Length: 181
Image (cartoon, rainbow, N blue to C red; front, side, top):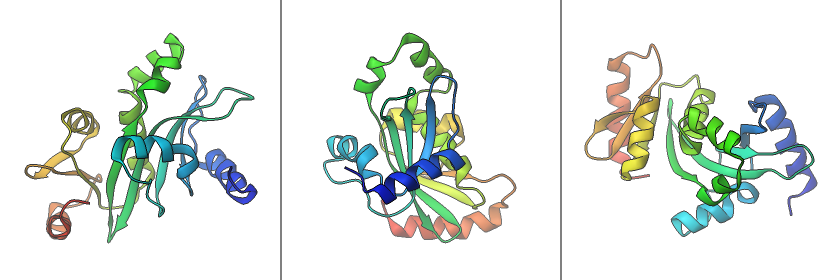
């Protein structure tokens, strides 16, 4: 059970930053991702969800019901950029949705694509968002939103509009030096 303070914070954050949709779908940033994505993350990656910012979840929440997490992604600040990781979606929850809600999600590229695209928008202003991507499906969805392979075979960059290449090159070198994150 969430503490009352975290519950209040999550409600305020969702109201201020959530993009509410007519079908009760929204992406929200939360301070504590464990209640929203802890079990899903552990099932996918075998360890607990990160306990440091920034966490974004795509939830489905009809009026009067608890939010059900459909997808999650984590972003870590690094200099003037962010490092994306832990992108995961819940196919079991997707199958429980109405056809109309499933169609709405698919119009946005699916659950993982929606949470990744919207979270990258909310990280602005920054120079770029980087991601190590080994999964083929993840590579495809991330390329659809604008990620580009920057250091083969796994490091991708989502450069922010207007950031000159000469500013990105040294930043990319530093991210490469970090290794997988």
